[in-house]
Image (tube, rainbow, N blue to C red):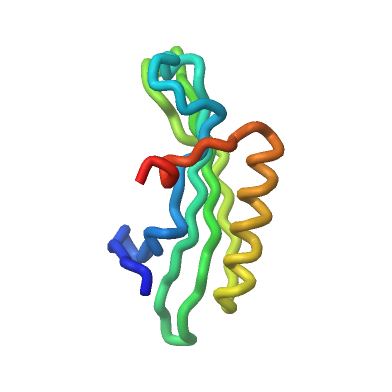
Length: 107
């Protein structure tokens, strides 16, 4: 059973949400890092439950002086196994780009 947390109209399946980075070294300044958030969301509606795989990119913005999220991509699925498969594909693609460290590994 997955624990869920409300997030606007979405519920997040917590075991399917993670932030990925290229390093797990806490001494590297944020200005030198970039991240991807990958999550599997579910939304109940009149037709049933719709699942969404969300990927967003984050990196330091000199102008804003903080980490900024951009490049959000969301794909929708009616079948949970299809959403899980897409999540795994995106996770693998990010790992191939060097984003191999997950905040889920810290738990």
